[in-house]
Image (tube, rainbow, N blue to C red; front, side, top):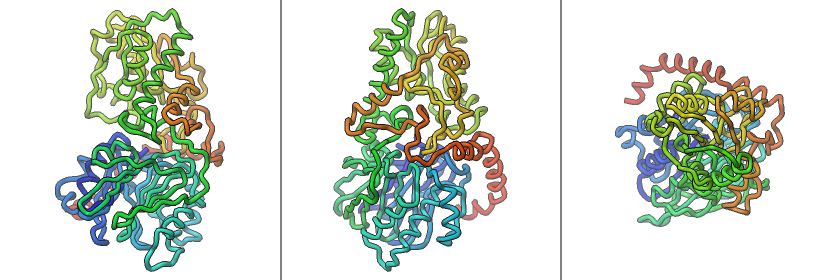
Length: 509
């Protein structure tokens, strides 16, 4: 779950990339990076931290050039080391840099083949670096002094032949242009748009349409599954289908939680989808509990507000803001480790007692993942004087790991794994709990674009659409990406960072 952007314009792109990444900050708060190309010379700045902290004035002065890519990261594979911050770069052929959103499911095999057959060195444990090297090898196989769009598309076709999983990528080829491509199922999002510049048409690629809107670009369309688009340094646009596409199956969690409500994902309004989630959830509640005694509906800010408001309207019950959110605490879902998540919930939210005292309260959240947030919030509601506390989730129960770019690698860390709804209800401390039905959730998104019949819903139903995920793979994934494994990697990364502090400072000065 990362945010990426690529821009080709007639003037320096550094500020444009910075502003776009700021708009995409919700997609990753671990690290940020920008690379620009200025007459074939590459300029790079990346580090751990928020966009506003990674880029200072002295860095922005160096990020000159008419073409560039940017990335905000949350680590779903690999560690959180600064070395894992993107963009990644390889010098051959031509000078390639990549930003990537998603996860590959065959990284282990790729790393072996890259070392033994392609004779390429991989410096990190990131699947993004592996993907970049696969693209580089496939492009190098063309053996051209000057690459053409056909060569670029052939390289992308080679990537599709070798890489499996969910991925959306933008690759900058120094002196040539930008290429954006998406996995054959369109799991991870990628959209492009254009605007008229002083020297002709300018283009932007991004994870979400809101980044384009913020910079004055008009959305053209989403990159199709299996498609690649290539914009050269002169602003000429090329596109080609590089593999036989599978069924278009975008990730439904974009609509549940990830994306901003003012974005369009595969031509579906995220805001409208969340409104429909509230409507469907209200209808289910009325079917199951027609004699409910709810006094007030209160959302858990921010992503559940839209659904909660429409649910309240449908039920004819008062909607109230019962929690004040501290804007300077990050999204707790993407924080590594249960202890950090628990601490951050208390820091993030404060209850308004007047809205709880003596009332039967229905709390509405977008989803229940590990249960950390909802357990503590229910307790906060009771401490604020609530008579009864009910809980509604705009998404179904999350019972299975995700392998396509969402940080849910371990079933043992999911509160719903192996439990009935009644057991979850007891575990979180609610008087009763209601989940959205999966069919209803899918309907809320597909109504916005009837051409999409199916969504990637593996966390809800355990169906992995790439067909290469089995129990052995899931066990290996859990062992390498659970909270304990991440903690160990983070400690090693911190030690390494301390050892290189002087060197890093000198290089940055």
